[in-house]
Length: 305
Image 1 (tube, rainbow, N blue to C red):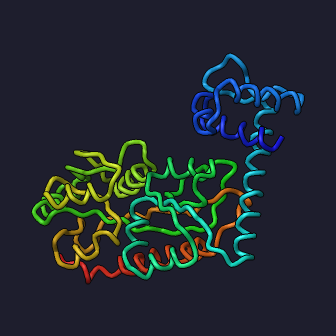
Image 2 (spheres, rainbow, N blue to C red):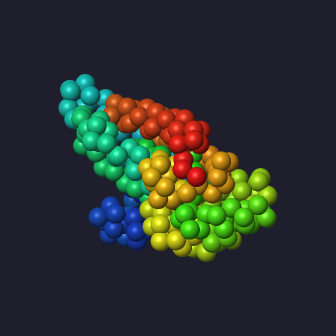
């Protein structure tokens, strides 16, 4: 039954028999037979047949949860045995762009990751990272916090990342005047579906400012390039632009009262899953980095006017 539960979990994760069969290196008829046998063993239908997209019955949801729990327990056992034997472990870590940039800024932090593990690093948006953790393709991920997580995920750490609204020096003076009138023109926004876009919009609205989007992007690096080309204004991670603020290459919108947005981040993993020591060390390091960034951003005298 354990093997059939594993295949059923892969089917649900993939969303269809064809995709799951490819992932499992099976024929589609063989996968269908396996699911049918599982239904007979459990004496309950697991799928609403003849309906698309793939839909689980109440019994199917229970079977899926049991299969995920089996995955977690098997993974935990493998980790515990490797650590007991003093063997290097394989870990997979997901991060949004800004966390990756902060964590990989120094050789010491990279050494921390690879000291006792073979590490797979994935940089993606929060939606994809959460799905990858839920499907056991990642051990954990740093993502932007959102109101609801999947029921099989749990938050293991929180951090706050400061974003600061910046622009090319030629644009900032005119932008400051517009902000005084409640407008933020030529705004380079995060992509429409992102949680960060909503957080930024809500923070600006609390200051009675309406952003007028000129570009959308999923990448802070692309947004910064547009800023430096004088194409607009963006709310970017403070750690990303701190050195540019210090040299005056970019300027903070708002002058002595810069527009700051607090972006809540969370580290998530599968519920009840154990984490290898390199990942717990990395969690502490990321938290320290963003604590330091928050302290630095509260020192406006270090930002050229």
